[in-house]
Figure 1 (cartoon, rainbow over the protein chains, first blue to last red):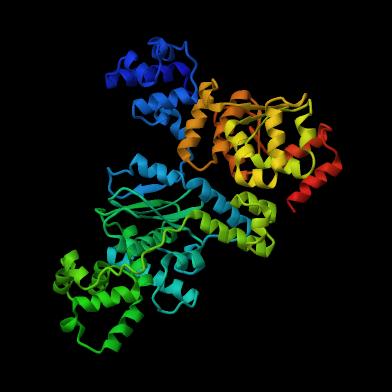
Figure 2 (tube, rainbow over the protein chains, first blue to last red; figure 1 turned 60 degrees about the horizontal axis):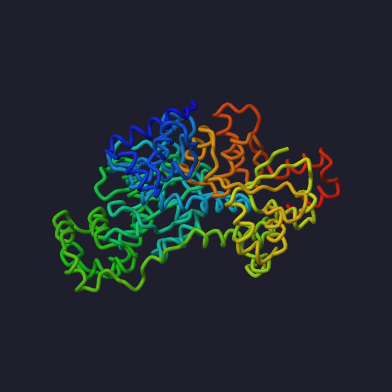
Length: 377
Length: 170
């Protein structure tokens, strides 16, 4: 299990040589005036510490953890935030930059989890609102139906009716207590769902891809993963292969955002022949009503047989400039990025009001003085 | 008893209960903190605003301005560590969900063969799990309240003082 020090030193030497660096070059990069510095590290005459390892691995452009490779499995819990994640595109991984941005959120996520425990508030699970025992779809259609059924059960459980959801982050937080954060991810990555080592879930959406109006769908899709694949994480890329898990999450997102009943009522009120008279501006009207993207709306209309395949393709290929002429997307109501500390403050304030968190603990959690904390109540 | 305190709040608890000087002057204790925890105690907004005297006590103790004290601040990043401690550090860093103070203090406690004291159950579980993976037979980490009970057993604090500490968490 343990790796000996000689192995670490040997690895440092091998990596340097493979990269074609001389000892002198590395010493110079480290700002050392004596050339034997690197040789001393590699030969055991210079003791190892965090600074030395960090500096060398930065120059060699490797993660320090790779020096300790053999013991990775022994030390890492099998289910930490990243190892839970199943990346649908086989060879695709999140970049180190994205990973580091996500890692920076994890201490706050744990703090939020502690606050949630302190107030006795569990995260919402599928079984809290959906009673179907065996979820084992055999086809994408069946999977989508299960997702839609669960979304209807969710709305029924909380008497939400079939109204559109005005603010998706507030909605999810109110009913599920799962935080949703916008973060700069790789451009191809739409969103991410996972849990940390302590089982605290987090939904992330990308603030960096070119179709920001799609984020609402991405967020609810990731919520679908939380309900249907609670012990796995998911990173959703824009060229993913569709799997049954994805179909369930898609069905859930479609029905939660655009309830079939609500859509039918919309068309009944319009009173026109949908198949023949539907225009782009009607879809944009629907987008604004349901707060979803144009393409998603067109797809839902196709799934609901409101338009045929030909019609769907016609709308699907509309260029961004065509849509912009019709005042789409509506820029007046962009998704607000909510920091994890905002969620934390909400939970701590609840705990203070309930008396399950005292002001000392609250001040620690929020890094506020006790006076400031008392003002939250 | 050699301990590594990973959580600045532990000093806050001793300060609030009027025990800080007693703890820092106990000859039975050898307390280590990393620079991350030291910075928190001396620079953190909440601590310096609400407990400015505590920051002063810590600065004095670390720089040995008062005669007898047992608090030592360790520069973790430049300290020579055994390879297992380095290994623990990078694995915990890779997981990402520990606070910086905990991240430094767990490998330091392992390296020193000391006890890691925190008020965070998640950090205790993590520390004991990694120490066990490296063959340590006794727990690496204990909670603050268990530590205080230990202080009572060693007659460093008395029963009333322990009750004062417990009252903080009611």
